[in-house]
Image (cartoon, one colour):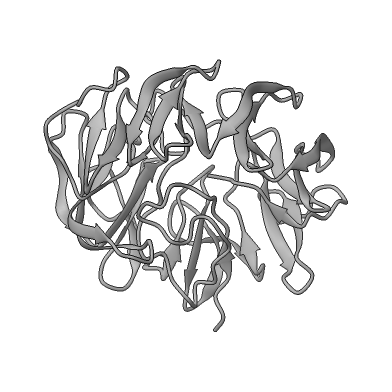
Length: 336
């Protein structure tokens, strides 16, 4: 069978190859875990249901509302979902931020930019180092890291050299432990890797994954070949060949295994196995079987799916899989 493309955003070159472009799962299933984005947040900072959706129309990115009507005319080279009232957008080669009216809140000046989470956003400047800014664009934690994830629960993962550690909002180490791979906290747990490494082609491989708590203590022991973030009480983990889901105690939540999965959002997660692909519900059964060549996760009751890969035709759908609005789009923006 031919597997679909799970659309995911351009994020730092950490741990995941399928972020950054459309990638057929025949070439590479979800060989590692997802990173970055305010989508992996603790219970005190819930993922925001989207009201505006980034899409490309006639070569530029803008935003449409839940009915598919253009809310911010297309004029950007790239765009992310809104988070904490602003969205990261790229004008030319530089990233900045806009509000829901399309007004610039932080001038385009960064080589890369993430979402605002807990009042801070990770950005990469001309020097190639990552730091964190506040809502006005002023540095809060100076650019000094080789890579960085988002703040959640007061901590953010950062990399200096080959090792990852977690920092607090002042940029100080949150605890002493270091790791070979790490993701942002989500629902009070963070997935970490020991023994793995980043290959020359940008794919993180090897080692074993587990989960730690906010004090850096083991919460779910190192045992997985891959581990995604917790969302809605579930996290995807991988053995040598397939993915399943566990709860916060590390117990499987259902038996079904998949060749590739996404995170749960609004009770749905993208998944693919020998039966086909689509969106599964929290019990692991198919909530929406599809034949779309590509799709994003749901947010605010909407997802953007590819109807015709030969023409590059994408559209907005609701939770029942029905098209919303009349407009077609060239591709979605970043939905993580």
